[in-house]
Length: 518
Image (cartoon, rainbow, N blue to C red; front, side, top):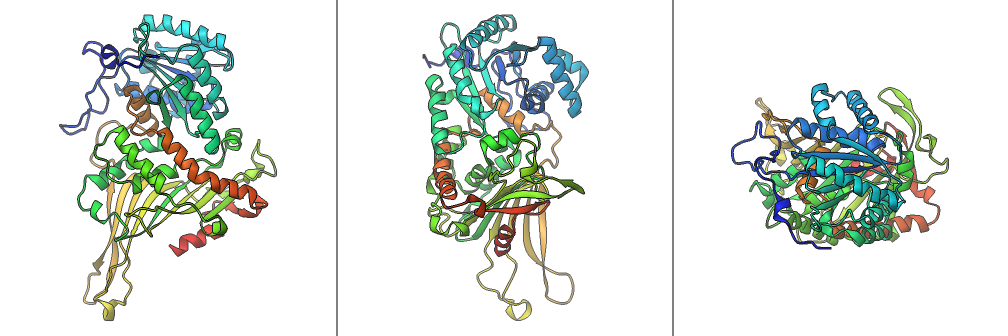
């Protein structure tokens, strides 16, 4: 495979280019006018839920905001038999149901939308797809630049990746070929062994620069803003360490259960975004804000994680599974009563971990990571709890304890930054009160807003891997987590460790006690 860069495919001339979106409301000097190369986006698994719920709505919104290249081509493929018109109608109905359909723009967008039936394990069908793509690309002049979006269950990743490669669709810069990229959705395996095997299969036909491992949470504006807050403001980085920070708490709570995705959940296991949120919070400053520099620093965090003491695992890991309860005034079933879930399932739906980073910056600072389903509300935030003042000069008036400062980085429901600090309460007496200084992320911004999925789609088209997992990071994360999983499997009945909690609560009582301690 020839990986030599082809300048003709790396950029687009002014006549054919469509500039990046979001020029509206942006200050002068922001780099947002780069051209996007024409390309074909092949959605494998196009008849599934992810395509109608996320992929097509994301691409359509990019189109509305001039965020797709000109020209572009979208080809859906799956085992379902559909015509081009059937596929267009199905996607139109999905957009209409979400309230995002703009009929006049849809007519223009749908002219670039096609569908081809394939069998995921049949090489001949992928070769037929390859021939069909050549014809469509000649018509739409997309220069044979291709993105393969795998909107399929994780169990099919290896099979489909092999078929794409064997059909010659992974080749780059050969025989008038453009670039080729494959997009793999999280989860990347179920443990270290399966993650390594998946990577080996991907690299049989794709090089690392062609592989885009999506964790769409990384593309949320506030997650990216953690880096800007830390490294673009001189007041924060000097105190972002063990000398001033008492502990860090990261929570990603969902009020929904597994809903209609029980098959996926039982297969993939309890997956979440906590490791990446930990990385952006704890990483050292990269020398440049470029993909490999940023990901190098994240990898250093994963490499510095201290292993859990398995002899005292209960002090560091709390697992739970939701039972029946009430969410927003409605009764909801327990996990084992969900359709498609085994009545004896031991799959966790909740986890709290006490993690420590063994390096100079974070020695002795505990990180508490909590994630779960069917909790009291949907909420994602990072809390930086600073230490109390070392000495209270107000002891005789206020006592020795003064509430410490807390920095909260809200990701959902509000994207915001909030800082608490102490001020004097108005009046004759000397009393302190805690006040908040808030910043809402979209305050004073008038331009279009892209959701996280749309952001990663743009980055795939640009070939920017900054917000994507790199394989060494994947393997280091699983190296940290896999021994815990194995210990839970071998320490006796995992059911004894899996604590029940009521839907609509904040998790098992043991986890609540841990939170009260911090």
